[in-house]
Image (cartoon, rainbow over all chains, first blue to last red; front, side, top):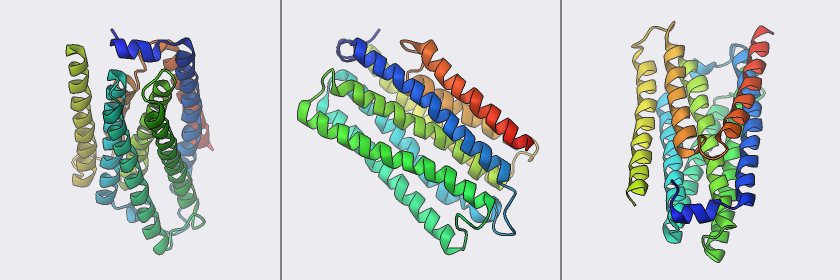
Length: 197
Length: 90
């Protein structure tokens, strides 16, 4: 049973259709990342005598990035929770925290990439590294896009408050954010953890 | 109000669960506690639990028009699995 505020904010047919359409986009994104994972898994042994996953990755650094991104998913869920309750200030706070954590994740990923490049592990060094940078770069670009998108929606939220127009947009952005978190769970497992096996 | 508080407790508990699952996966690899033969299955299983938590609790996949949401993700997943399968054969 949805709360009264939730009922009013998301019951609109147009909002419902937008949310549903976004799920179709998520389906398409699953294909995109599935292909990138497929390429990575296929070429991960082709290291051109350069560093492989075992030598390159430092799991203790990656675990920090993972916890930062998982935490952003939690703050995002809290943002949606307060949005449904109609609490504008708290919604702003939680979503600002979400994009701050997202920014932290991007910075950590940038530092990680720079360390690899300094060791000579560039995108053109081997098929393994090409697929690795392609997969993680695409995910990182999605995180960056999510940060910009949510930031712009927060400006709208500040200007117009929680309305039938602004609330569904933020909810859709939260779906996107959780999706990029789901992708990261697979990256963490397939690329980093299984890379060490 | 009680229902809203319940939801808040649920997302907090699930967040802690996700962090724990991540740490468990990390520990399993780091400590070499499980043989390499079974390790991929255990890690994928732990990841799948996290994905289910995200989809059901955070993304409301089972809410209104749930079957369309599940179908769109499942269709995407099916094509992704096919791609991975054929790339693996190559």
